[in-house]
Length: 149
Image (cartoon, rainbow, N blue to C red; front, side, top):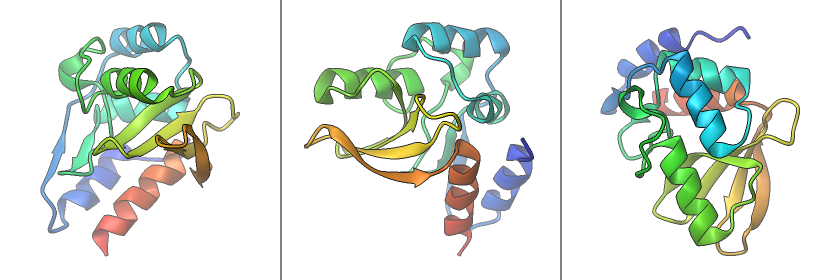
């Protein structure tokens, strides 16, 4: 992994957008999230959660672990967003929600892929639409870059 989430967050803070981060999560909470979801998180996503916790640009936040508590199950948390999509839209159990907006945009980590590809899950058709990025690292770099333009 050659990504520095703190550096990218610092670059993002220089944009005109309102930015907030949920705060880093410790190893216990990362382990707890994996057990709650019954999935292994990709290493790069774990690094993101341990460094920034989740968040980003207001109104387009990346789901995370808020207040170092993986059991929080409301919107904006990985656990809450994944549970909601599983319940409401039959999200397959191998997907982890990282972005859930207005109950129609649902981007996920596909844990079936070796690199943890980021996919768009169509909640209406209840299937994966397309691949957005090869990995969370690629996804986050693009997330920052697009907001700096």
